[in-house]
Length: 87
Image 1: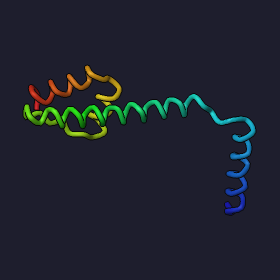
Image 2: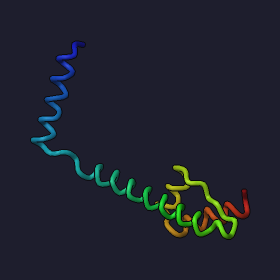
Image 3: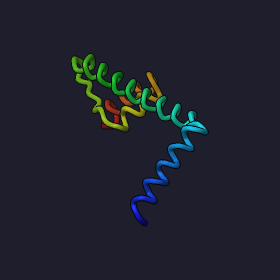
């Protein structure tokens, strides 16, 4: 397949999206998930900052950030319980 056909197809797709409009709902879900992920990272950062005096440290990675971001305070408490009793 030649590159001019691929570029022409992409230009046509962009024009169709500009005329018809991009799907907004999936982008809204993606943005909402990213905001919750950032909130989870911030919650874990503050937990580690204030919990260091109690010997509490929860690593900040994708899994713990998703749990704390989507579940909120109950997610943080479950991570603390897992950190103290299981690990």
